[in-house]
Length: 270
Figure 1 (cartoon, one colour):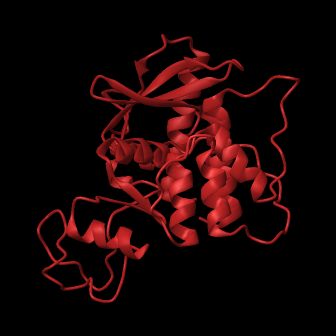
Figure 2: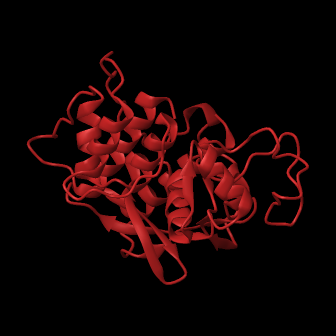
């Protein structure tokens, strides 16, 4: 398990614990800052305070992602990777665009070039004074433009979130894990839809402007900007199995959007 997985599991577990103990909706999650139970510190990912946001229509606990006083979004504990979702919400708030698996700033020369090329690393990026990082330095031979979509472990606060949370008195091997998203069914093997079909399926009844030209950038645009209905159309176009309702109950729109995006990411290998 890498550090991203550890942080994701820990944050989900803290939210589940908050739900089980009956805390008030909107309460910011906290965790210890050292080995001792006290003091505790607010849980943060990518500058977002992480809250227990109550329950959804299926009576499932929700994580909230709050930037200062603004709630950027919520997602069911069992169906989200908190670091990835916090990154997505924050980058969209800043107006960044997803290119492949990285978020880039379209207002910076390197970000604009990455969007134009549909990739975040190219010949001529490294050691080029035309393209500078936010710190005003040239990119190195191993650097890529933008922020990784899975999130930055260094943004997780307190730092103790990078270590597994174990139940007191239980050996590490027996420590329960945070709930994971349901395993997506294997996608059918079909011919990949054309770029034009992908664009049309991702726009729904009200077409949106999509300047992406390659399959990778079109898919990234669909994942970033499509609502649940539009994602369902893309999901169907790509031959994925339909979403099964549980006990006759339809998932909420937020839950559907998360599930469809996760399935499409897996189907596309993104």
